Image (tube, rainbow, N blue to C red):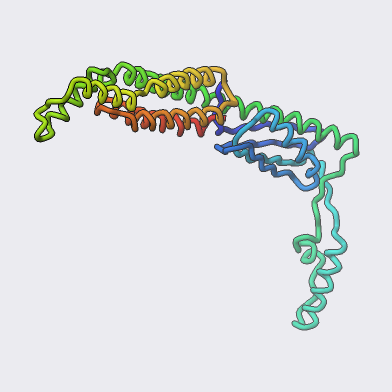
Length: 294
């Protein structure tokens, strides 16, 4: 299944009053870039989480965040004695300078940082179990992200296959263009000679034959047509096989463009040049869409 590089995934869970949720957001990127935001105290999960994500996703810029919360009253209020001592010392100094009335205990407790609301600490085994469940939940969020990316990828696959078909049709049109025949080249050469003053359209038959052969050789696009045909087959097969193929498709887009440029440079007729210009437009559209593929 083809996957785009944009999408969103989410999962949540809880254990012993601790609730969590993962959120993954993905956008286009040349390589895989994972930016992970974890709560304080859970930094040790970072490398494991990144490795786990990389097993399922190969390309894109990912923003991954883990949020934690306590449920069912599993919190405790703790007096920050160090902060309290500093606050009291500061209050006493202010009161002595300003001659203001002493502050009450309620006023002091209202100062931010004097009272902390801390989560009740988990035992080591409980903490390991919690982290293991969080990582399993991360797999679910990653799967949800990939499902979202596959939905976009289905539409993207249809667009890409349509563009590949257009490249093939234009390649066939160049293949069958009448201007490529030796007779057509000879006719155009004779018309050009007829415009030259003094020749009156007369040229030795053998010499004309040589010039036609030389022009036909220079204008031969057989190799370019064969390579374009091979690239369209390869692109269609890749798209049907599914991700990860983004980099391969980008390479094929470059090859498409290279052959098209050569075809245009060898063109010996307006009709063939027009086909080449149409090809360039379609190939550019194909290249832009490839940037969205994982």
